[in-house]
Image: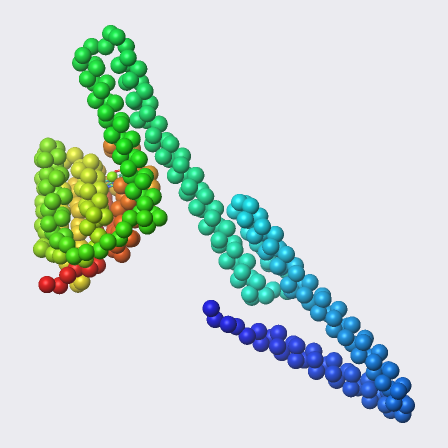
Length: 344
Ligand SMILES: Nc1ncnc2c1ncn2[C@@H]1O[C@H](COP(=O)(O)OP(=O)(O)O)[C@@H](O)[C@H]1O
Ligand SMILES: [Mg+2]
């Protein structure tokens, strides 16, 4: 940190010392012109020095009280409350008679810290209530179909329907738990960011091939335009990204096409996943990357809003960039830019 020299303080100290010494000299002159008795002069000067020292000490005590004790007391009071969990605390030094840059900066930093802690607390509370909320629906489905199953008069056909519904809800719960765990590992950087050279084109081909039957089942056209490319990055984490983007494209597209394109821009790989689906309204903007955010729940029955939050975490972790452009009822394109293309 840069060390600052308090020039104003040094200047005032210099002036003050000069005034005190000059006052003592003037008093000495005045006394010496009145009497020649050295003992008498010494006694008077002793009194003068004691009085001047007392005045200096008093002034210094007042200065300390105003400039240090009061603001530091305020800061201490606020930090104690923050330490006890009251993150609404904000230190106000505006009404102090004398302001000091350093103390103002400390107060500012503590205020920012308290606001950040408050945000983290809100996010944490939201996260817990969102997870609980997401669990409620599948649990209610399991409970009601299990009750129905326990009825002796259920037909074989209804039994099958109940079991299918229960399996569907269990899958949903499993995916939720899995996503929450993955996301937590990503956020706490517990997943190894193991970078190695691998074939990005082959990886995209493999992931697209896995989705091909479902895309065909929906009657959608699949376009794949992949330039041959090797990259140094985290293979397994990026697989999670392609899977999420393709599953979204598939989920939110009822007719038209899904396109996957891999190209190069300088030293970067550029992957574009486009679809001609329902699109994303402009007001949802970047919020789609927030945990549990789903724009239109009617389309999102098979999701929990964690996919894109994970995608964003992964892209941040591997040092890439993600952007989205979309038009409602026209389609969506996600663009991912990755560093580390191998020049061969
Ligand atoms: N390709 C897409 N087309 C339209 N909307 C999308 C697309 N991808 C994501 N979204 C919107 O962003 C939301 C968040 O996506 P995501 O985090 O993957 O959650 P989920 O898929 O579980 O709903 C989705 O619910 C959807 O509203
Ligand atoms: Mg998704």
